Amino acid sequence: MSLTRRSLALALAATPLAGVAAAQTPGLSAADKALVDRATAYLQGVTEARARFVQTDARGATSQGTVYLKRPGKARFAYDPPSGLLVVSDGGNVAVQDSRLKTFDRYPLQSTPLSLFLARNIRLDKGVTVTRVSRMADGFSITARDATRKTAGQITLSFSNSPLALVGWTVTDAQGRATRVRLAGLQRAPGLSADLFVLKNPYRNRA
Image 1 (cartoon, one colour):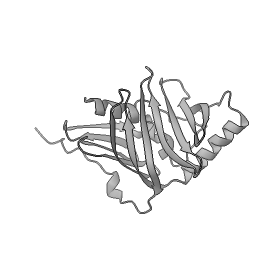
Image 2 (image 1 turned 180 degrees about the vertical axis):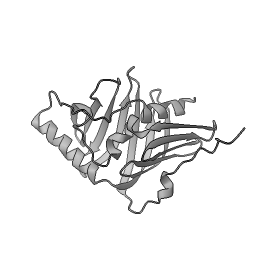
Image 3 (image 1 turned 90 degrees about the horizontal axis):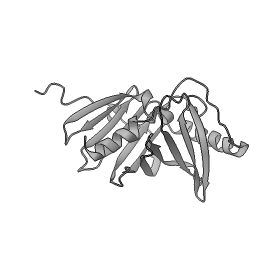
Image 4 (image 1 turned 90 degrees about the vertical axis):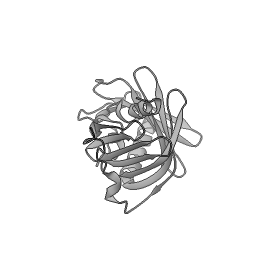
């Protein structure tokens, strides 16, 4: 597995965050909880969108492309050449195709961080524990981990204030290695084609 592809797996499949157990938010102030509620309401309202993204892995290597989101459950990360990567969530599974290595992998959506903001009903108080709310001059971030503690690691969602918008996320694994995805120009994109969110294994029938 190449470094780029390894970092992709980390960013999209390393940290399960969706679950059914109610989570607590220890140490959060009323103001923190208000920001969590604000972020939740915003994410709930993002049904179809597109943006450019830049991904930086733990070694500092970067790649970029275009992301399409269609809630519930669907996303497409189309990496620019020469990456050869294409990542598609069809609502049930996340498929990762690497045309350079001619590999195809599939992960359950519910075992990836994508499920946190692709759910039909976004809940930051179900299945995850919000451990920190941080404020910056131009926005804020929310850090969460698996409420059941079955998986080490965490995800941090970053937002701008004016206007309120998701600007990226960082996934940190149990060893402290972080992969960051930064979004640029996130905008609503009604009418996205259903074909964007279908990805079949092109190598299945090859010898």
